[in-house]
Image: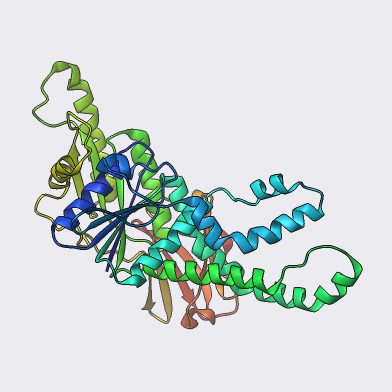
Length: 397
């Protein structure tokens, strides 16, 4: 099974590239499902056909799916939402307002993750191509399993025991709704599903992310940030697709300056992301929709490459022995000391980069050690662990 996720700033053409990749995979004989987790679905437009919330046949070996957020809400969130509505009703909020307030923004993307797990485990497909939401939403989506795992493993068990102990007393003293076992079971089920998704998406033999960019300064800057945050959470990038590059045969003087600017931005892309493969697609003279044009675009992007193969092997996080201690090496390109914070908390190492934070559960070999120092080696952060009783100077982390 192969899982390929496409993401990028809104408007760069990631849906078209994802659709073209899916067509290429299907025509190579791979049973392929292309699914959209972007609330602004446009897969159907790319294929010029109707695509439903369940896998819909498009051509031989190819199915499409545009996930229905309301259906996933009913399947995964109803028990939890019903309790939250009861709690808000008790506090004086009307039911219709409470129902709106309990639909957390981004839930459709969260539940789309569970569809990834379902399709991988079904064994029905050889390749799953995921057209993700624009960059910021994708980062939130991909970091959720890690964040929720931290809550479930540390806070949730205590909370459930306390509620079970006080439920009879509270029920006699007040009408305050107390979460039932059914609510806790729904939360646990959601956690198990998301934890399984995390395992799939961080499996180097199964999953990788492909960044889609245009040769524009703001788009490339956002892609660089995305690349950093993906590394923080252990997700592997195996290609960068630069879309809408002016082709060499465009010689009109009107485009001369534009071509010069694009050349500068292409140099920045190579400098920023290599050795990750940089794949180019020219600016076409028409909208690339429908199977024939998607085939043409796939040929443009991949050439002789196998679109389903892992195009670059990367290891965002690695622990190795060094002298009398260990070094934890994490890929964090484009980051300076001012952008980050590192500290130890019990058996966890907390790494914050910008607005994103990751709680790394340390392996057994590192739990008994302290952080000695942290330095950058190229685009990798190296955190040194050694034996002793004093933590590292925070100014050095």
